[in-house]
Image 1 (tube, rainbow, N blue to C red):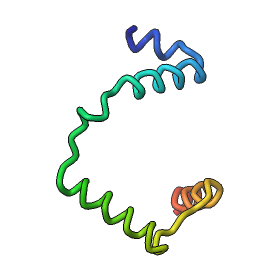
Image 2 (image 1 turned 90 degrees about the vertical axis):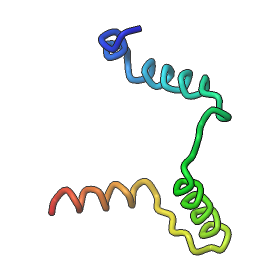
Image 3 (image 1 turned 45 degrees about the vertical axis):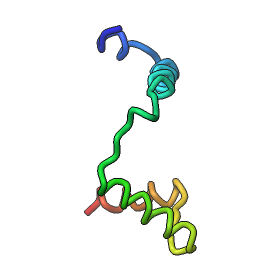
Length: 70
């Protein structure tokens, strides 16, 4: 399927295609750099220790909107 055909698909069809492609990727074939591994470890530790900050989608949209207005 070429890009032109993909772009003619509905949003739902494109999301379905993305999901199928994602599911087809062998996780064992993904290689992380040492820096990526360290960042993931740091994030997991912040989560476990309760130091991670989480935001709702609404909070994220407000923050993005504020940045666009600057």
